[in-house]
Image (cartoon, rainbow, N blue to C red; front, side, top):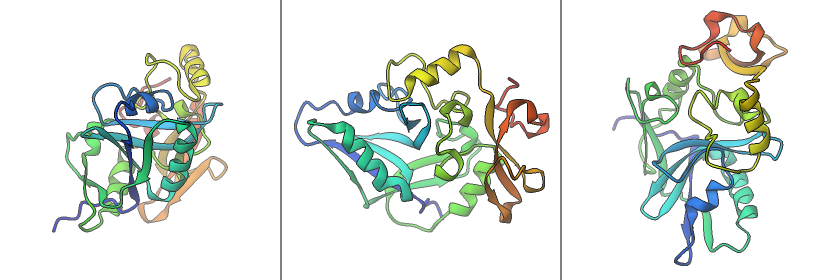
Length: 235
């Protein structure tokens, strides 16, 4: 069997326990991206100050919505979403019968960047391809997950360039600071994947010694031009 399973990812299912509950409307007021149209989308849940709590992809399956997130963050994300649920008749729970799968393709369906490959939700079976995914993702300069993104401002995570934010959908948690940064065109720092021997220890978020890479949170003026991935235009 071809290795396709991302074992470090989990699937959270949102479903209506009574007819008439608007699942998309529920998430629309919480997350950074527009879930009212075509899915999947990449989005984040932010603090009121606009800093990242968790990033994830949102899919649809029939009338339900599926959240493709880090496995280690799934339970905390469920608790956070449930806090906002209030009296809505919405069930939010892990679906351990499902898993996130991926294969490398030059033009896939990942909403962040087609070069990231093809991703889908399927049965929780198959061999792991986590190492191949990590190497491929970092080779394209794309960051994700708590170790790389948590507690940073969403636009510093290159969310605008990677289709992780909508500036036209209306309010969501953390929207005010995010919109202000975009309006001012003022992103002073950014995440960037760098060779490990060029990483700044004071700015390093995480290192991947086996790949010879690190993720640094650098001031824009300190970013050497050759460290910018093709999709990240000069500020």
